[in-house]
Length: 434
Image (cartoon, rainbow, N blue to C red; front, side, top):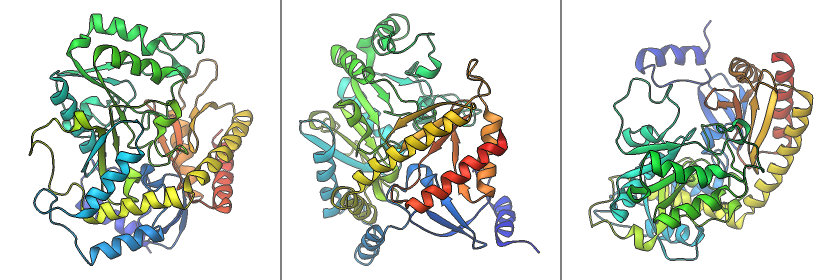
C-alpha cells in the first residue's frame, strides 16, 4: 500500500516540471514553531526554515492573527491604484531600523529577486552609470538580471543564457579558500581594496560602476563570512569613487545573525539594503530601503508592481517586527547562536571531515572536506548526510559552490528539546557517513 507522500509524489511528477526540484520527499500538511508534519503524520525537526524564511517560526500566533485580521478587511487594491496605511507604517519602521543616521525611503516588492532588480534600477538611475559589480559565490535570484549576478552556474544558470550585460564579478573574501593564496589577518583583506583598484584598471572603470552588491554572509555560496575589516574597506572604495554599496540582506537579515540586519556586525551604513524571506514570516514580501536622496530620484511610475506591498504581507511583517523588537526574539537568537557555535566547534574536534565552522550568531555552517590539508570538497558526503538526517527526522540544507557545506537556518523560536534532538541526529548521522 502506497503512503500519502508517495501518492503526492506521483501526482507531482505528472503535473509539475522537473525544474522545480524537491530536496526532500515529505509533503507538509501543517507546521508550528520548528516542527513540520508531513502527509503521513510524521514529525520533522526543521533546521532549514524554508531557506531562511521562518525565523519567527512556522505559523507564529501573532503573524497568523495579523493575517486573519487583515484578510477580513482588505486583501488587495494595488498600492499604486488605491493606497492603504499598512504599507506606509511598515516603510516607516524599516526606515527607522535600517542602519544609517540619514533620511531613508522604502518601497516593497514580492521576492528577493525583485528587491535586487529594483535596487539596481535605482542605482543605475541615480548614478547614470551602467556597470554592476557582484561577488563570486554570491546568490541574488533567478530572474535574468539576478541570475546574471548569481555566481554558481549549475543549476542556476546552465542553459539559460545569454545573460544581462555590464555585470562584473570579483572574488569574495573566502578566507578558507583564498583565491589569492593569502592568509588572514596577514593579508589585511586586500581583496576589498588593493585588488579592487587593480580590477578597475583591467575590467571596468570605477567611473562606469553604479554599484557593488554583496551579501554580508553569502547564503547559497556557503555562508562565506568576511573578516572584520572587509566591509569597511569595501565601503571606503565605494565612497572614493561614488559607487553605491548595495547590501543584500535577503537571507541574512531579519534577526538571522542575532542582529536585525547582519551588516550591523560590521558597523557599515549601506546606501541601499534589500530584505525579503523572513521579513513577513512566510508571506511573500521584499523591501528596498535606501538613502532618501537616491531612492527618490526615479520618476513617478518608474517603480512599482501589482502585488508589491500587499496589505496582508505588510501586516504580517509588522507582526514580525513586533516579535523581534518587543518579544525579545533578538536576545533569543543571540543565545541560540552561542549554543550552536559551542556544539559545532565540539563536532569539529570529533570529525576531521568538518574543515571549518563559520557564520555569525545562529546563521552558521559547516564546510565538509575529505582532507583538511587539501580541503578537497566532500560534496558526496554532504548529500548522504542530508538524506540520512531526513530519514531520522531532521531537515538540513546543503549549499556552497561545491555543494559541500551544511547550513543551519532553524527557526529562532526552536525549543531546547527540539534543538538538542536535532543536533543529536546530526551527530549520529555524521558518525554513520564518516
